[in-house]
Image 1 (tube, helix red, strand yellow):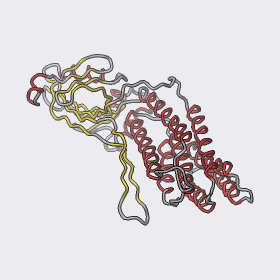
Image 2 (cartoon, one colour; image 1 turned 90 degrees about the horizontal axis):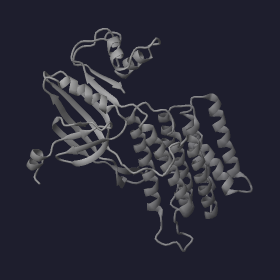
Image 3 (cartoon, one colour; image 1 turned 180 degrees about the vertical axis):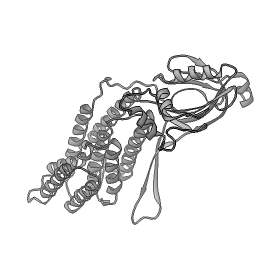
Image 4 (cartoon, one colour; image 1 turned 135 degrees about the vertical axis):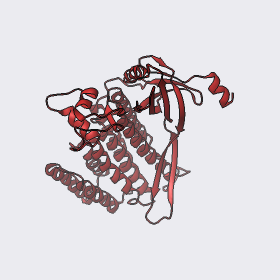
Length: 400
């Protein structure tokens, strides 16, 4: 069927989570497909190594309209339906049928007789994860511990350890983490862990399991800090971005990268469980985790040798990867649970002059401590000059 036939025979329909079907008029509709990719830069190598994995959920930028004498009533009904936390089902003349979740919704009532909506939606998978609904942080922490144990054993079994390289890893992590930890007590505790790790490396009797266990303890430390999810994750991401250049291309270096890199991926997942306000924050975090995990697996794959029957051979440990995959799936399932509880970001273009108090009352409701008022002011960067006089056409962002 040609695009002309599609437009003439297929009507755009949006079935919201409350199962109400809307058939607005529509115009522009763009589609974007991203891929899970990882890019590496090496200090002494010209160019970049770009590795691609599976595609992410498709994103669609939609523009549609409710018109006629009751356009405002239709728009308010749609806005109410859009607040339902279940996915939308869209039937589109260009892109067919797909399930999605809105990441943002912008409403413009400035036109006469027409209400314009623009929104970005992301296609969502419909498979049910084989995990109970009560996926809690302690379960993820237990899974991380299990993965660490597997990685420690694989590292110990490999033998042929590079002690100076291990010392460099611990020193690098300690220095990197120390710059971002804001609490003095936490900083002292972390320094003690790093010192214990170096002592174990330099001990006359080198016990590989104990050394890597202490390295993992150091790696997991930022994940448990009383800081924001973003802060905790970025501390670990910076450490991960630096480790490739620390390891050499020897077999022992590869095993060391597998254990240390896998430890960081586990810690990233542990660090990602926390408080989120909006759905877009959660989906962005899922993307960061997916990219980090893909980068780790793809780089391990590049290190793997064709043969496994010599001292120079390298094959990643199955148990370690399998246990780490459990961590990733548990975290992803937990974040999906949070999505249904999180708020959606909305945008509204003022169709007349207003003020912060009236808008807070409209979008959040007033409270005696002015928490909602401060949220509106902060979210929209409303200064003193605007509080009592917010002009027509100003974009207001709020969360429902």
